[in-house]
Image 1 (cartoon, rainbow, N blue to C red):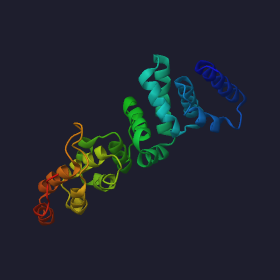
Image 2 (image 1 turned 180 degrees about the vertical axis):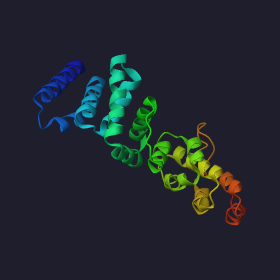
Image 3 (image 1 turned 120 degrees about the horizontal axis):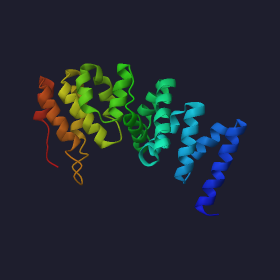
Image 4 (image 1 turned 60 degrees about the horizontal axis):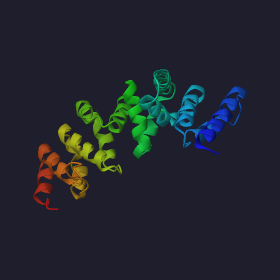
Length: 223
């Protein structure tokens, strides 16, 4: 069976399940959201959002927002808003716990339509996911707990951004955590930017407490 035939068959099955309001529709749509064919992924995402307000539709909606026709983009944008309004808590949890390309797709879909939460803690999670470091600095000390949590993110770019933001906020509570980041040598590869440890050293110098300066005195910045 050709790829086109397989996609057409998958779409026909999904459309029939939707028409029948089949109890297996939700589970089948989740499978469709990971289908090799973009048309199936996008159709599944739109229906997941419309019928179930499921945050797992967001990567597919992100795909629709970037690469599809205007009516599909409009439908995807509406769906992103509906999910955010219907289940903002689950959306923020997804941003917090998902990693890598899935989190990026969710965050970028929200960013494309201009959605953001109205609670500070949720906004911190959203801004970290969308790499809104300047906005986090503007939030000040309220952003510190979330930024400290981001220091353990597996993505070195996220860790580096969080370190930079903590340095510019200048809250002494972050010093012990920034000291730990002096051991993080990620970065400075293929033009990706400064190492996390070097940004941490700059952050500690900016904060300038006795504990921060003592850690810097013992810091060896050599590779």
